[in-house]
Image (cartoon, rainbow, N blue to C red):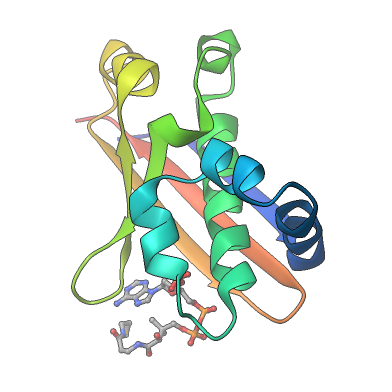
Length: 126
Ligand SMILES: CC(C)(COP(=O)(O)OP(=O)(O)OC[C@H]1O[C@@H](n2cnc3c(N)ncnc32)[C@H](O)[C@@H]1OP(=O)(O)O)[C@@H](O)C(=O)NCCC(=O)NCCS
């Protein structure tokens, strides 16, 4: 059963500016090692970073209440399976909230162009 959805759009330039201004401090606060490893070496790495940022925001939006206040950016991780399909992995308090809310699956889809990245998230309970 679909419980909730969340969507977010991010300007690639904002992520690029934040990364250039704050360097590792920004990147390491928001993105996990796995996420940074995925984008490393990509031709348009800021598009992939912005898509992951949008996905994290979309997850927060889908949860949509105060239970998400304690979530940390890195507790929401976007990984890609062998086919490139993105998967949401929650750890820590985010995982606890997922269990508490009886969410069995978090579906995510990403898309990015030169200027924008979007993410759509669906929370499913069994
Ligand atoms: C999946 C695909 C359609 C993406 O379309 P695109 O217009 O090139 O690029 P978009 O910006 O819209 O989407 C890129 C995102 O698609 C997602 N994606 C990649 N492969 C995917 C797959 N197999 N299933 C679902 N999503 C996928 C990724 O999240 C990717 O962003 P990321 O690399 O930052 O994680 C394209 O990569 C493709 O045709 N792949 C090969 C065939 C394939 O696996 N097709 C599956 C669907 S038929």
